[in-house]
Amino acid sequence: MNEGKEVFFRSDDDALINVCGLYKYFGKTEVLKGVSCSIKKGEKVAIIGLSGSGKSTFLRCMNLLETPTYGEIWFENKLLTPVDPYLHADIIRKSRTYKEVRAKISAENPAFTETDADKAAISEIKAHDLLKKNEGKSYAAAIKAFYKSNFLDADLARRKIGMVFQHFNLFNNLTVLKNMTLAPVETGLYGKEEAEEKALGLLRRIGLADKADVYPATLSGGQKQRIAIVRALMMDPDVLLFDEPTSALDPEMVGEVLSLMKELANDGMTMVVVTHEMGFAKEVASRVIFIDDGVIKEENGPEEFFGEPKDERLKDFLSKVL
Amino acid sequence: MLFQDIYRIISDKELIGYLFQGLGNTVVITVFAVLIGLFLGVAVAMVKIAAEHSKAMKIPAVICNIYTTVIRGTPVSLQLFIMVFGVLAIPGFKVYAAILTFGINSGAYVSENIRAGINSVDKGQTEAGRALGLSWGKTMRKIILPQAVKNVIPAIGNEMIALLKETSIISWIGATVGTITFDLNAAASTVNRTVVNYLASGIVAGAMYLAVVYLMILAVKLIERRLGKNERR
Image (cartoon, rainbow over all chains, first blue to last red; front, top):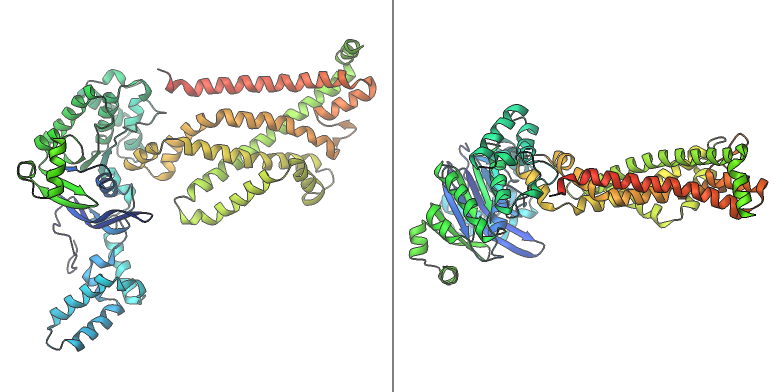
């Protein structure tokens, strides 16, 4: 995929989603401060944390509903964000700054080998954000070439990244059936009849076939969220992102939504779930991530995560919610 | 005396003929001005909304902002004088220049109404559309605009009603076709020259304005109810 290109933070080229050195500022507020993580096919990742910890922003960056300030998002080995040059050593090496810094380091440290000098120069550049001033042509060309060969348009990526929202966000002006068929028909994934057939099949599966022709305003929260989930499934996504899918529901409706999500998990769907439902995280997740203050504080399988948490903030958090 | 004069206006074919002719012209002017206004309003609103997302629209958005600010910041009568006697001072072109002026004036208000309507649609609707892989334009057309239209119908209806009455100032510029005075307001003055009873001619012309406005109010209500069907439980 990226032969001969050294890419920092990309631990896993087989991953479905790779998040590399993600920073997100809202104005001057730093919400995410360097998050890196990869989601493999078939994984069910639960993301937990306090309100305002950045977990929803993190999820929304994955399908570019929020534009990352720094860092890169990779989906199926294609780049969704602009290149962040600090993540690519080979791009840094093409800059004028690199040559200058490296020459200086070699002169100051005659004992350094080639590799030592290279490493020192790159870390020096990253530490002091030196690339900003550099406008070398070969450097700009390197960024452009890398970007072109790896870039994937966000609209295309989003067709394969389903998302389920806290407030359902069914289209109020369309019937349930239209809600489900709009995107697959408009994007050319399915023909109209095909899409309707598929939609009715999914509605039957969740026991809401009789609601096909009603408008969302007539549905209960639980029904809305289940329809929102199957609407996302209409695009045959490779991964589903859930942004607190049960937080806006009345307590008696949480169960029906969670059981549908469990069903999907058992079918092998790749899922990333931001949730406050610890029971669901324990039972379904293959990995649990604790985000606090804009960074990943702990990341583990559910048994270790809940059984022997190491981070003090996580211990504190779990003692409050469990 | 008053009732006699009103009866005289209604029964005299020539007098009531003037008024109906004036009413017809008022309605025609309003319809064309509304069409221009709606077209401009939607276009300007789209440019302003698009500028929030795309850099290419930044400069058009600045022009649109100047347009809405200037038009909403100056009286329509002044705009009419400038257009008819200044910018488009072409012989025989007065009426068209006036229609254009009313349309341009209305467009500024309509654009703000539509912008407010688009902004009043829950942001989650856009996010859901984009998250399903729909482009910004498709999300706008298929999801946001249909909902925005429903929200702005009352405001747009108000704007059209105001516009209908605003067109009465066309009589100030002496817009005529042949010897016939032009709109309903002007027709009322013509009738008054024969009847010499301001109250009587005013009441008849006023009733005609009111009748048309009332029809517009009913139409707006009907449209609102039609579009509101997906919100009923």
